Length: 142
Image (tube, rainbow, N blue to C red; front, side):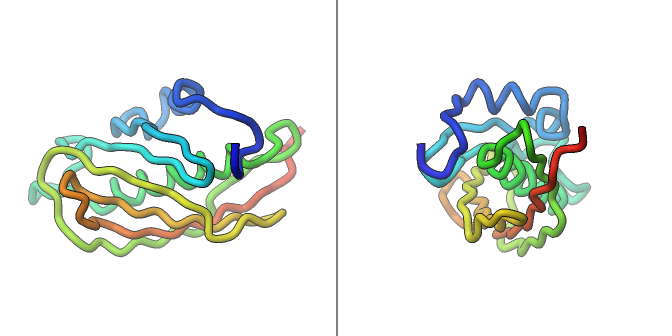
């Protein structure tokens, strides 16, 4: 089970992301490890910029989706909620087609904040983007 608050299946986390931005971008969670999650996102007209490259904003949305879902999986969802409060990204390599894979792993899991590192790679396993997100862990609004 690792860092997760309870065991999750890919079907559960993919279902939780339905009818959201991640669904619109075609993001699919593909693997849950003891301390990481992997997902994929297509590089297609929904995720490209006018020059034909993967849009940096799509990479950031992908990274935030992976990081936010990871925090959601670590908390007591009856008592707490999580929201992203800061994200940064370095875009390393352009991608024009296929898909990209993201892997998120924790840098810090505290009571009030989580910090996650997300590495996005192309189909040849070359680094496309590296991102870090800070997520606030808040009391759930009742």
